[in-house]
Image: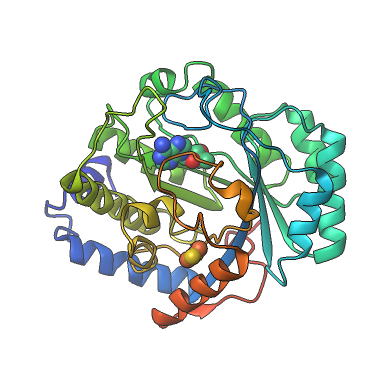
Amino acid sequence: MTKREIIECLRGRGKACLAPTDDLFAAADAARKKYCGDEVHIRGVIEFSNYCRRDCLYCGLRRSNAKLKRYRMSPDEIVRVAAGAGSVPTVVLQSGEDEHYTIRDLDRIITRIKKQTGAAITLSIGERPALEYKALRQAGADRYLLKFETSDKELFKRLKPDSSYEERMRCLEDLRKTGYQVGSGTMVGLPGQSDGILAGDILLMKKLDLDMIGIGPFIPHPDTPLKNMGVGVRHAVHLRDKGLRVIALARIVTRNAHIPATTALGTIDPNGRQKGLRCGANVIMPNLTPQKYRKLYAIYPDKICINENFSDCRGCVERLIRSLGRTIATGRGNSLKSL
Ligand code: 5AD
Ligand code: FES
């Protein structure tokens, strides 16, 4: 698809055969079926630290947010939680950019989880030097998530004042070279984000040849500088629909990338994840974080599953998958691209 066609589809009009939203969603669902099948992959996420050295304007974990109570899980606790998760085929280890954990710490955590569970391990711990990515890959990490957040350099600079777009791209390149399955993606509805920028995001996903793509709506956090950006019911509906269209277009354009129906989508609409799975998504990521920490991993407000534990969430996502007539994947859910 051309940039112009993508923009037309994002607006829900235009001639590119995908004009009405329903047609776009049906086309994306057919592409998902053709390239990924009916299996939905479950990835259990452990949010092991909410400390972050960055100050991104949109994120509740930003270091300037003094209101947030910070926590770190110990290596033993992280391993215990991962090992207690039954047979979840993938464990995602996620945190703010927290330099407290050394490469040795992370190496041991990864080694022990792999040994005890055999699960695939995905890291989502931010920007690190190439050598560290290499060491963690050697320790046994299989995949890495690092969202580019927006493909527009100026918007990136405004929203991530202490980070650089070029450095982010360097990290993604290093991860690829090191042999990780690489995931990246964007937020939808960022202040200052046009449909042209979103179309650029989708084309960048294609260009990076991503194994995994995360797309979630931006939800303003009250303790961040962007707290007043977009509130109200009409905005939420518009945002949800735009988010779903970006998922649908990402599916059509990238074909077989793994795309989750994100928690953020489930936060702005109680059926958001179901809708995501019906317009291109093929992954769902239940929360494995111990309950006492969940409300503290407040990237955005009103996150779902704060009062649930892992077995609640696992049962919930399994019911959700079945209710859509889809199947729960049993394999590890490796990249569908030829590695
Ligand atoms: N709303 C939605 N998503 C957010 N993220 C950060 N802040 C917000 C927010 N306010 C997303 C970013 C980040 C991921 C961990 O969470 O895309 O990469
Ligand atoms: Fe947590 Fe549904 S996934 S309760």
